[in-house]
Image (tube, rainbow, N blue to C red; front, side, top):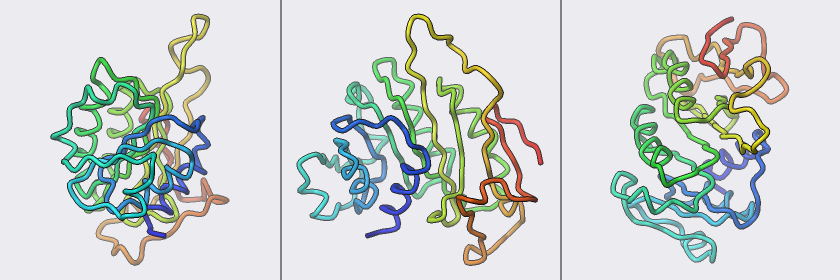
Length: 220
């Protein structure tokens, strides 16, 4: 079991999204296949995109398809039947968002939910989290959340869900914006990765922790 498997399993348990067996998910940066394995265990049909090799156990799974390309070289119109998208790439957060935006904003695609790992290789990038949330909201995802999972290192998990609307539903989310937790330690400069504190699920909003809202506001 890899850390990628644990991260994806934890994210799915945290979000409790309406994922149904047989739905399609595309994963950007799938190698060596740990996160794909977690997605497959939930009954999803996974399209993994990565120029690197994928573990044979994942590669031979009947519901897994490997596209050995960089995500920037994949035709975005090929994802018209995809409902979910995940990404965990060793690139800057803005570059990850660029790749995801290219896919989800294509007029032919209707991707309902995103699970994105954003690498904070420089702790100062944590100050950009509100702008990352606002950018994703601009793609039409009304429910946007971010959290440092227990299996994350110098990174956070950003999740976004697009509502399924019917004729009698409003187009805007109702009620106050959802509260989102980000550890205050992200705003301490040059913290070594080995010293990064872990957040536990039972301590979702501990004292001294910064709070973000789904509308991109910042408070304490």
